[in-house]
Length: 308
Ligand code: CP
Ligand code: NVA
Image 1 (cartoon, rainbow, N blue to C red):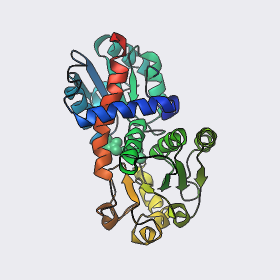
Image 2: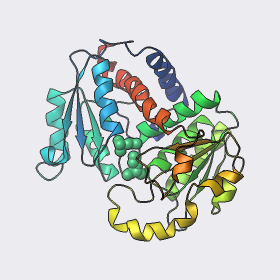
Image 3: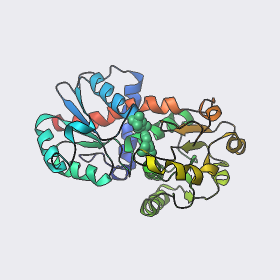
């Protein structure tokens, strides 16, 4: 693996599969490798709120024998109090890894470039790689295979969607994306994902009709209509996305055993209705749990490297 994890695009299929194998072992036995990161510290620099990402990284680090340090938005004041490169260079003298949750993706790239230690993207406006890894691990856990699997993403072409596009393409999973006009995923990501998918033998489709996107899909995935940082657009987005809700009408067209996925937090009653989110098809808390197991594998691969 490369020094950092800033985008799924930087991982090969073999590296993803290898991470999943290690995740299997860690999930089976939470005490496995309980000393592997002893004496190591992970800094978590968060410019946005978090439940899953912060907690799973802190608990994961603890379970591996290491320590974590949460740095809230006002403490480091990234790029305002001092430059990202100076933060990166300073922290590299104290800690063994950094998780960064930020707005512009270029902040992650700058942090990774400036740091002599691994930098993990804990969500940027462009991507959410740890989420996508936990999600596809969950798909494999539930469906046992990626072969012939179709994931339908209904909603905003955002950070989560971008990472899903890359990981589905790499693993040979078909992906249908259905977003309102003007809210489709980044065209470069789509183009890249299509090229990668072709090699892996899968298809990436952009479909304007959500009903068509979910028909025959094995997984339906959605995320909030307004991401963190887009709160001011919430009202206009509600209007634009109103036909893209995952609800019982949409479920009527889907396979009976379709998996319902959401990265959470969910805005219940907006992108997804309670009945669907609370249905037996939903695996959203398995996804959330798998963040912990997958990220422990990531931490072992990246933070343990230097002593191997
Ligand atoms: N899915 C996810 O990243 O959740 P948090 O924003 O709570 O970390
Ligand atoms: N797209 C959402 C994901 C939250 C985990 C956001 O960026 O707010």
